[in-house]
Length: 440
Image (cartoon, rainbow, N blue to C red; front, side, top):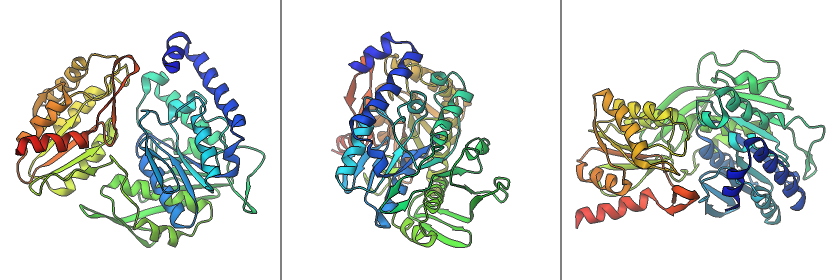
């Protein structure tokens, strides 16, 4: 309720001041908890939640007591709680309260997913980050930021925040500030130029980033992708990853590179990557039968959608059936036509449906995406605004050897509709329910 009132009556600059002020006050109120933890922030357009989970897993494997907060879930030590807020960086002091709980539980490190909107509004203020990680940059939230340049610069605020005159002393050790960046990104240097004690980068190309004094580079080579996982070499050392898709190789490189900057041994990190768990809702398989495979994934923008389409092709499906939608409420309207065309170029049958409409008519969003998919002229396209009915239709058309891919929601347990309301919704649960109905 407070959020809706603030957004309705305050202009954008005042909203930023509001969040910045609340963030700083909350930091003091909760006793500056981030100063008693090693804190790593992960930003980028896609892969943030998985990379947060990977870094947390590696830290735990190496003996740290870890807290993490992502779009998917939050965790303190072994406790896990699904993030049902639809927010990566919640305001009103929630992050500071979370960090205080982590300190009280005895945690030594925290890994936080950091969004461009949260940074633009100053929700990160009062958190003493030690590490800043950039995964990638593609067009997203462009309307909210009023241009790609503003979006890119918002993410730089995480890196600029590392430039402070003091360092933490934890367990009698001085904690360095570390920047880790994907060297294959066009704007990599914009983030590497910021001040830090150690700067590192990773690359999946032969050349990668140009030489920068003091920059340590990790290069992935001999990459092998399969339905069982991935193998690659980093600086001559074999890495085995139980996760599917090239994007997970990128995420693993990011996690390993970042922690190397804090002095953790490369060989121990590589060993721990072999047991990294899957992130809920990220190319998560929903087991219905042995005839066809079903996956849910959070992909909700063109780059991540293309990446997950490439990944499911590793399963060599007889046909690919995909279900997608697009967020409403004025969020990246331009991406709707791109996503519709991507789906039609990648799948045999496309189901366009409701996702998170917010205050926008779902039928309008579905029509925008479906029209683009239809215009490609390759796939059979069904426009079904009711997501449950779309899933039911999808299951009714599935044949042995097919792969069914539902995108946009992943492991989310709510759907955002009008007037700021969140209603219960879980693609995984609905799939199970509709499959049982179909087989009875």
